[in-house]
Image (cartoon, rainbow, N blue to C red; front, side):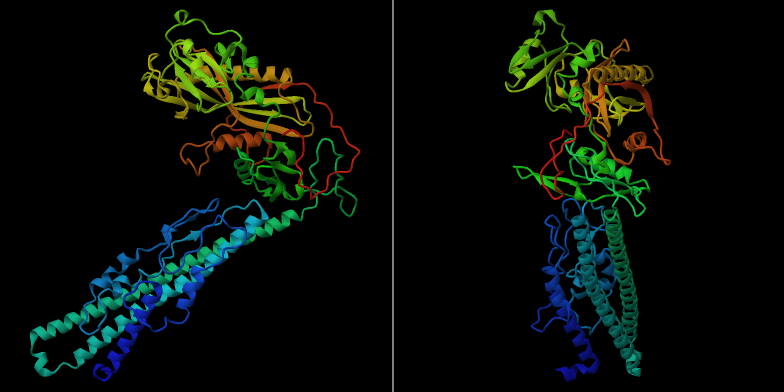
Length: 627
């Protein structure tokens, strides 16, 4: 049979067999064969399918095996997402070649070209570089990126091999068509239909050859682009590890100590002078809140670098706590004990808890009643027949964001809404609230920055000239007791264009200043000797028709949006301005932060130095000082 086919047909038959083997090995399965797959392909498939994960990477998605295109997956803190911009629609690109495959003697199965790339994984899984906060994270990431490059390299080779096979088929078809043309006899040349069929065959073969050549070039370009990006991601990781090595070699950092421990010795250079820090350092200790966000904004500055974290200790519930590597004192960390700048105010509970802030707010806050353990604490509200038809709000004292707010029509219904083991504040709606032009209720999200200085006495207050309105989706009515109408939570729009803002802003500013001044004078807010402390928080105000402002609560962990989360409306300018006030630098300024007053508080007690030896650096015991 092979002799009948002739040498060229036998060559084509071998190419077909090779293609079938390629498809079988890649999972496309155009034809089954017991012959071994091309050298390296089956081995690559096995090795990729069982690719070992780097140590310490349980959260990462496994690398895709070449047996089938792998879908996009999420892998914890580091996303594994398709690089759609780098992916070519293979089936669409191959369509011209499939449509024009109508050669007489190619003997190719009808689905070889159609499915030739279906069984080969697309290069559309891409692990991108992300900032690492620990040495182990950096090592894991570099290992994952290097493994990814190896996988992409093998996938690219296999894709180029398939495209090259398609090109070889097209070249053979052109040669066959030309040979058939040369072999045309004078008798056959007189047959117009035969000549037209032969000419059509030649044109189709040339068109297929051109398409196959273009697909081969396109595929090579896609592979090169992916490999270049993979190399770029690896280079970013390498540079990060190099910088991390430089950072941890900085011997100028001191150990963080408790108040009860003696101050550590200051490292000296060869001339006996104190060592100077090469950079300013920040550490993400994974406490939560806005700590990582503040680190990322500090790292926008050229003189700030990441100082890696390590495990600090583990509590009885198995929760891990982290600290800077070597338990060093850095310029900023979200674990206040290890930071020269604390991101939490000492005494913040006096502003956050709704029952405590009543002592500071006085007449700025609407009349408030308290439910404790299912009973009224202190004076109860008036009887039902002695109050207006405005709704009543029952709020759990230690909850925020409207997660535990109930609405009722009469004060007598309030007790039934309270859980026996919780504390609540109860308030009636203010009279004559200022509504939006379309009759919807709104309240002001007013942002505040408070700094306590290293002397433990001085405090600076700033208020933000811009803010947000939280607007109900429904037209307001005192008879409508739905939370959607009465409880405004979500930030709806910027406040600058609001008609009442010009008169409301100075009143809100003065109200916050009065509360903070009272808290500082009474020692509710405590200074930290030798440590700068700050916090960005918000205050909720409602304006009435008399343009008076009413304070309802403070939120010590307000919602903040970054440009990557909300490109059009975000709080980047507010955060950058606040951090420029906290830690000034030449490239930034306060922006819309408005100085609202300086206050002087009670001097904190000096640190007491113990005579005992300092704790060992390797200890996993947590410090007992308050954050």
